[in-house]
Image (cartoon, rainbow, N blue to C red; front, side, top):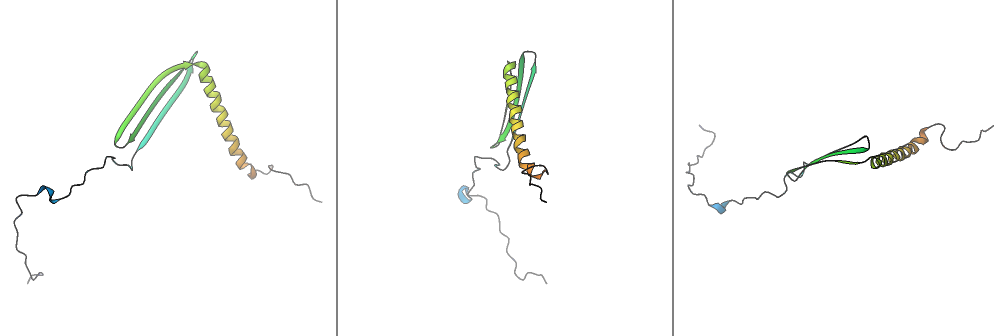
Length: 116
């Protein structure tokens, strides 16, 4: 005795399929918004009286890969000014970090008068 008491009659597949029978979803214009990246690289070097700049950028957004690259030369004084500004910015950020951590040091803050 079979497990199924009723048997279904076999049917033939339809030969013609209507085009509007199934609604087809159109793909969205944006491809995979959850995956994107950006990469950039800039190199500045000085030799003699000129400074040389090289830069490369690449990004992948909306299913499109874009890449850019350029090289150029500029005057040495512009390079020295840029380095000076970068050093000044770095020292300012370091000073802010040290100020926020200074309360951990034993010699920081106001000194209490010795009590007898």
